[in-house]
Image 1 (spheres, rainbow, N blue to C red):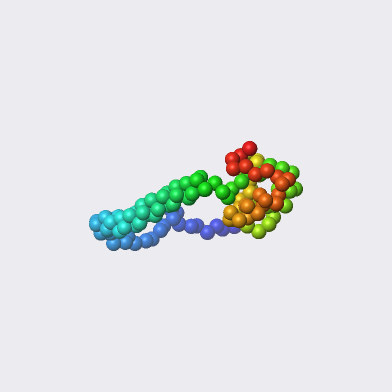
Image 2 (image 1 turned 90 degrees about the vertical axis):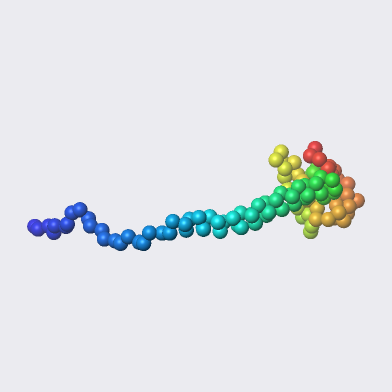
Length: 120
């Protein structure tokens, strides 16, 4: 039985690329500056709009409502269009209303459940 001898160690061939320019890294970093400026303005806009939205919800306090009452009635109320049933971190049911008209309509007609502006 004969075995084929392989050359050892393995030989690799390749070529070395031409050296890069010494200043190319600086040019690439300079091209990043406009991108960073745009990103800073976008972050500022995002933070400001988040604060404005937070104050709008805080001071109007009309649309999110915590609900107490029988679970089947709460789920029935939340099934209509323009409403969403959520649960907060403590497991309390919370209904989000799309507009103030939907909130007023439910407040006038649903006497079996109680709505709260803050978590009960």
